[in-house]
Amino acid sequence: MRNDLDTDGRGAGAFTRIPIDSYEVDREAVIAMLDRERRSLSSSLIGLSMLALGVAVLPNPAAMALLLALRLASFLFTRNATARLDVRVRARQPIKTMQRIVFGAMALTGVTLALMLWPQPAGASIAAVALIQVVVVVTITLIAVTLAALPAARDGMLVSFWATASALILFHPANSDPAMIGVVTLAVVGIRLYSSSAGQHLRSSARMLVENRRLSEDLAAALSSAEFLSWRDPLTGLFNRRKLFEETHTEGGAHSRHLLTIDLDRFKAINDTFGHAVGDEVLIAAADTIRDWAATLEGKGEHLAFRLGGEEFLVIARGVTDTAIAEGADDLRMMIAKLEDRFSERPGIRISASIGLSPWLFGESIDDALMRADLACYEAKRTGRNRVRRAA
Image 1 (cartoon, rainbow, N blue to C red):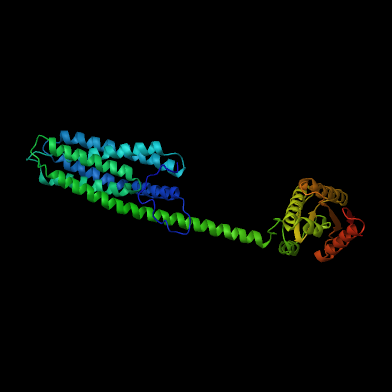
Image 2: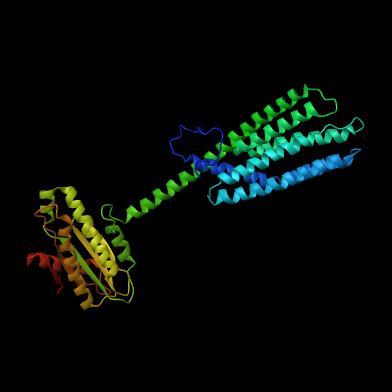
């Protein structure tokens, strides 16, 4: 569908610093055009009424009434085609077929409008003939301007109008001045140039709309990213110390709480031996493991995982029994130890974690509970690493 919308001035705004999808500009221009076309219904009905009035006062209106009926049928066909195009464009559906239908409808519009210029006999009212001619010229101009975002359909209408009007001048039995073809040609060219200018303005407005929307989306994304980074660790995506403070500042509830401090064993040796890039990969893998483990941990509250810095992590588990959290902590320890399998291309790498577990009693500060969990984690390291120790 990206190439289905024909436009003038596709290169407009090529020097903007914001990359703009030309399809979105085309789409917005067509939507604006269709909105304008829909709002022009009252003007179109007035034009048809004025044509009917001019035909009614002609001395022999039967033939012109038939041409007026053709004009009305063309008008209804065009309204239906543009309404269906509007639905497809807004739904981002393929519109090539509908564009062809609109092109045909507009070519028919040009023919029926030109036929309304059928030369009248000498006895016809000058006012009636002038009324019909003025309405035709105004109508063809307004339609050309309205169709600025669909130049192929617009040009099809103008060409069919010119060809039909020229044929009437050349082949109608009544005496006609062939020089009128030049007048019609100049009128059509002038209308084409004017509508092209309107099309460029419409496309410029559509581009500005798309750019503003893009800027709004970029700003929203930037604000969302800033909010994310304000309480997320940029490397692992886990919560950071700021989020820990905010969470514990509002901590409350009746469920039991436990803290798990997780410290990767001999992490400095990984950085020194394999490089910091590999160390970062290990941190990310450990963080993913902790996050996944916390998501599957049963309990009656939300379990939150944090990276405190370096190779240190923290989990706040809520609503989990002492037995369940102890078993879960040992499961987490084994899951982290299995991460060595992911780094089999790094011979000799050793990945494990020491975990300290402590209850977080209601009424006490996070610092007190965290201190006990840290002491338990230190005890796990002191007694051999790769193990879980509960706070006394």
